[in-house]
Image (cartoon, rainbow, N blue to C red; front, side, top):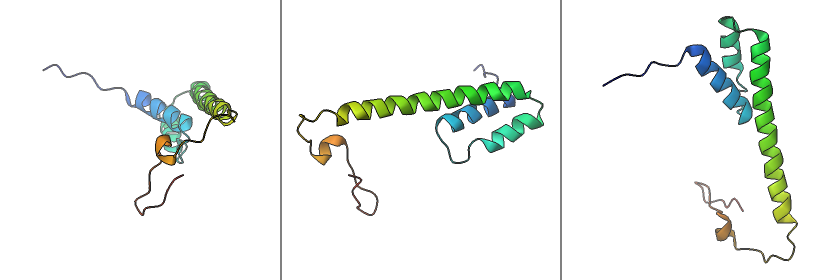
Length: 97
C-alpha cells in the first residue's frame, strides 16, 4: 500500500489557524500563530492567512444574517411547530426553542 506523504507542519498550522479564525473558535488560533512565527513564516504571509480567514468568517455571518432576516420578514407565513425547525432538547431536557 502506498503511503501518502504527510503535510508539512507549517501547512497544517496555517490551515488550523485559518479554520480557527473562520469558525470563531475560542482559542483564536494563538497556538498555531506562535508556532508559525517560531518556524519563521513571514508576517506578511500570516497577515494574508488571517485576512482571508476573517473575510470567510465575516461573509458567512453576513449571509446567515441575510437569510435569517429574509425568513423573519415573511410575516404571512404561519409559524411552524418547534419540531419542524429541528428543535431538540439538551441532555438535561431543556428545549433550545
